[in-house]
Length: 520
Image 1: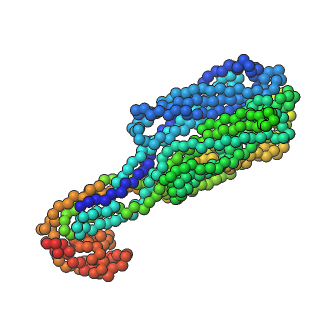
Image 2: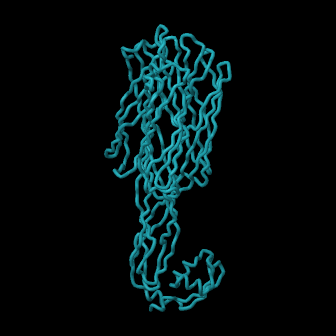
Image 3: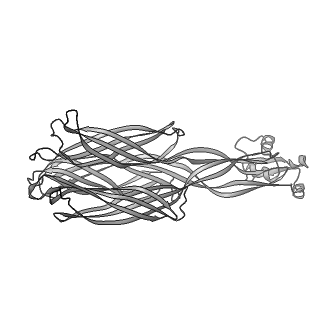
């Protein structure tokens, strides 16, 4: 007897953990920079540069980069300042294995940059690290039994989502941004910001497609002192593909895309004038692709000619329950708190923070906020460029029929659209569209056969059975149970009693011939 097995490769969630650190440091304004009178806007980014696996923990190394725009004392021109704070953090991850798939992420929960005095600033930040550990496991399922003589096998369909691809990759976007013909040359690039918008990924045969938009915003200083701060805002669409020979179009993607780093610098055109900005952005992709397959496995076996005892082990198999994308609008009105007359909105920057995600009936209840930084021009002579922060909460239910607390889900969020409209009197209307990308995997507990022990038939027990019997079908009976009980062949019962594919119903009378007598 030979058991024919099929290997099912699964990504099993082992642990989700998080850790927070507080960063607090003072920085001196560089000697080449003038004194700080007023901070206009600040921003920060956290970058994990190295991930090192250690016994029972993970070492994360990276840096928090900060930057700010400010007006100097004595009515000088707009200036900028930037710096970074390194971190070296250890996160405890019990039972971490070298073969586990590790997903890491970092988020700035809070960033505060305050002026101590005109030559010194204080930077405080709370950084949250999130780690997801999934074990790559293989489950062997018996799909056939060969050389087993007149054995009867009960087959069952198991829908399994197999992990076809689990890896990380990068995608690079290079672009040259031309400034408007009516704008002055770039003397110094003071502020450069690049955000991802409306990112979409899709598996194809032999490749993975990626497309989206880079929302780029830059502030620069012109060559003449009387020229006010200039800005450039542009949406850069991108589209491309990454080669994956084993990928097929029908696979289910679970892909996270975030900005690894983005560099922007002014560069001269053909005439030698600084009228363009070179952009180099690296997108980091965390890729998991699942291949769903219906597998016919052997769930029970017996033989009229031998005593067969299946050996079972408990197993968990995952299937794709939900894969969808949805969106919700987040709109609201905000007003400038400075009292100055708002002339123009320069730029609106937004990020999504999720406060709570709860599994409810047929869905996920998502509560979060759209955190805004609005940069605008006023009629102030001393500081025309100003900014404000706003938080716009939202609640949304993402459809996920059949979801329960035992399911595993991956929820990615992103901004599809974000903009502002001037209403007058210092009031602005914000319009945003938040995108939700959801994949839900449902766990199913199974009993899998790992082996079959074979022995001689218990002749005394078989001889007690009548050679021919008329059996009345009971409510919980199946054709398989009846055939196994009376040592008969399933197909023999079906043909002898002229049964269709649906089998017998309670109350039917079946004529049964004990097949084991032929062997004896």
